[in-house]
Length: 280
Image (tube, rainbow, N blue to C red):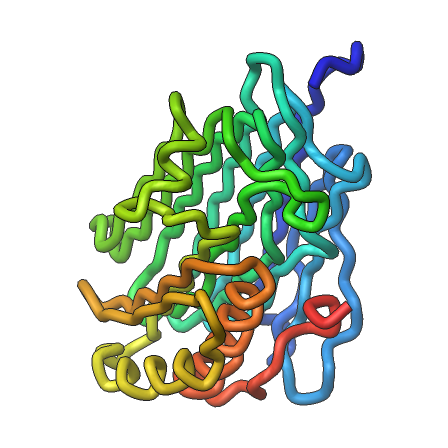
């Protein structure tokens, strides 16, 4: 998309730490078009930070940097105000960098809503998670391939998504998705996306326990959210629980949210719910 508007460099730095026996905001830095809101948490839940893109979406050449730090023993939830829109580009890529650091005994949930990748968009998104000893994490992402309600599919452009999770500085999970060239063929290929509207990945890093004992219940939760055309699976590897979905966009979103609710209760005893923004 050529708009004549210079690309933006949005920044959101958010820090939490324990003060006077409770998790409190310790650091905040914002640069447009990123803003951070702090709605009052529901009773019995943790502080919540909500990322807001004031521009209404990201265009060619825009760069967004999100940095979240959770101090020792603290707990926080970070989400987004709405689905992120990645508009089409004539050449330059939209870059999103997410750096998440969780200290000893801390817990971070990073569960923004879906990113909608318009046809001919060019997106590069990198997420790095650093976990200390006894740190816990629940997070992931949803990708929607095109403006489905408008009959548009992601058929050309670039999608490059990388996740790295390190514990004690050691890489325990690396995942990369790269789609370019004949995108339409890749999206239609039965061995690739088989015409799916969306995909999602959810990652749980328990604070102490091996996640293998959670796999059967997680699979059962996925079956409860099953619908026509939705494929899903759960596995455990290197001390992480990894869940995947592929299928219709509404079903992927619902399945992802349902399992996130289940896992936050199963892993740390939190209420099985997500912020109200997820249900708007």
